[in-house]
Length: 136
Image (tube, rainbow, N blue to C red; front, side, top):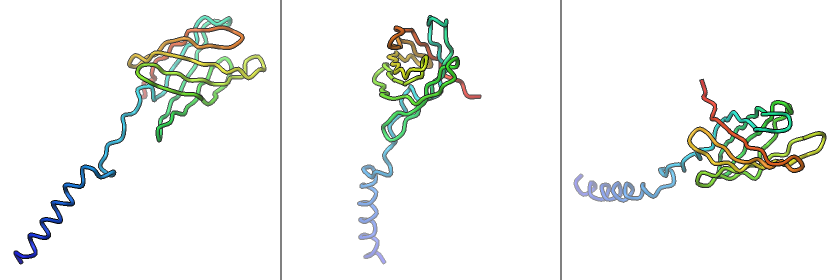
C-alpha cells in the first residue's frame, strides 16, 4: 500500500501546482466603472435642459448600450464607445428634425457621476451630466 501512496501523492502535488495557471481559476477582469444605468441632462439646448438616459453594458471586452432623449422619444444604440482612465466617450445617431444626426459625448467620470461636452453637428456643443441610477 505504501508503494502506491508515493506516486499518487506526486500526481496530486503536480496537479495542484498547475492549478494557479489554469484558465478556470483566473479571475474575470474588473467591470469598467461606467457600466450601469445613468440619468442624464443635456444642458442649455435651444429647447432648454433636456432629460436623457444612458445604459452601458460590457461583455467580452466590448461596450454596448442605449442613449435616449425623452423629448425626442427615442432610444438608440451607442457606438464608438470607449472608457480609459476617467474618460468616457460614446456616440449615438438620433433623428433630429427629420435628419440622422450623430452626437458624440466626451465625459469625465467621477464615481457615480460624469460631465463633459456633447457635440451635436448643426446645433453646437452642449454640456451633458450624468448620475448613476440607484437600483431599488
